[in-house]
Length: 529
Ligand SMILES: Cc1cc2nc3c(=O)[nH]c(=O)nc-3n(C[C@H](O)[C@H](O)[C@H](O)COP(=O)(O)OP(=O)(O)OC[C@H]3O[C@@H](n4cnc5c(N)ncnc54)[C@H](O)[C@@H]3O)c2cc1C
Image (cartoon, rainbow, N blue to C red; front, side, top):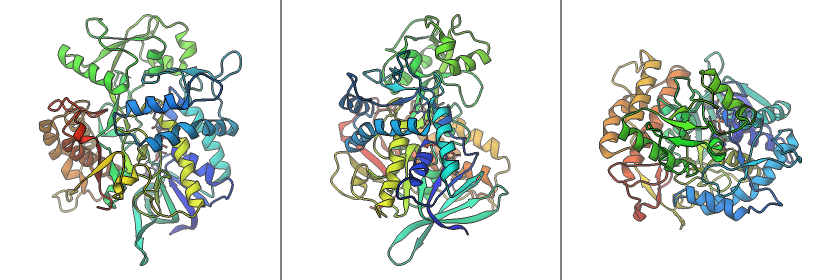
């Protein structure tokens, strides 16, 4: 048993976990520990390019327009209360980050520079280092956490939640984790925050780093904690089509500045500023029609490319392409899990003592499809809200936000509970997978073929046999644990995608191309009810 005296144990060191940890060391301070499976500065957060959407005072944009754009992208499944909190509290959190030392790009007059991205009706995306926004945010937060956290456990792998029942009902009391030497420990804390990020590694082509294996969502599913909206895996339309992993991202900002999409014949085929799902769908349709595995981004008309987008210029040039001259090969890549562990407006999950924030959570802010640049913002806003709630003495979920329907309360977006029977372990007696890397690769291929940008009842059913035997693996190390977690999230995604017999947001069924008003509800796995 490690650190029995921690008030708050944060799992993960991306924008959500670190924002929570920094706030926990602030007024009213809590004894906080951060446990993360790689180095503290390694996360999807540091790869984020385009920026953070936030309406700052004194311009013609408004909070309501940001709200409206977010709701429009979310295709009927956003929780409006959660979105209002996101857009109203966001600007204050950006100011706090600047006060902490994060350097955002400024225009020659010294005002914060703002870009426009797909799905945004105004230029409101703040950025740093051109397209190195996540790296700068991560740098500022890591520095602050090193200075304030009671414990930093780098290279520790959280395996599963510890759930105890002292007579007043089940509550989370810590995690079981592997330390850097692979030794198992029970790390106890009064409260645990899941900030373990997304699950892009479910697919062969992804922008996400190798750590994005859905561990937190899988732990929640195994513990019977409510999880929702996992069928909404957002595919980023414009990842560079190159064998590098994770796929270098050609940020929306390029299209915001005028870059064009061209098909195999050089023709334009979609409004470049449409939301991501629309662009990814149009691209996949066109790729199928033309029988090609990539299309083109034409950025040849953009002036001062290297100066304005140094990160993108570096990745493009590293594979021998010159953006001023060459069309850039692109294909959609798994990018962002819009769903996750269901929370109320303060990050409380259905299990008392367990909280979730940022990409691992389903706060309801993204609905069926996340608006570009809203996810860094979500971590910055909802991470600290968890801490405020803990400091206020909260311990379990309230019927607010996306949690309303889960707790059986009246909710603007209703819920349907799906039974999730997790398949048992593999038939082999010892349950060991001989080649974990190969098994992971096969899982990714199966998910890409059957549960990617376009799915159907037949393709989902054909994918299940590749996933089922891996769900119940009893891992002996971190690599097997990640494989079992990927399979568990894949299983939940297949189940949800099969039940959602419509196309909505990031979920597209070739056998049900229409959006069905009758299915305007969240699909919830686990939790009460
Ligand atoms: C290439 C790219 C570009 C992006 N661009 C933007 C953008 O411009 N704007 C925007 O808003 N969003 C962007 N995003 C999305 C955004 O970066 C992420 O959604 C966000 O950073 C997620 O933050 P997080 O706190 O949820 O976790 P992450 O940053 O994903 O970090 C998760 C953390 O959890 C740890 N962890 C996971 N499992 C375990 C375990 N079992 N035990 C211990 N630790 C664990 C990981 O090591 C990591 O530290 C981009 C994403 C990518 C990949």
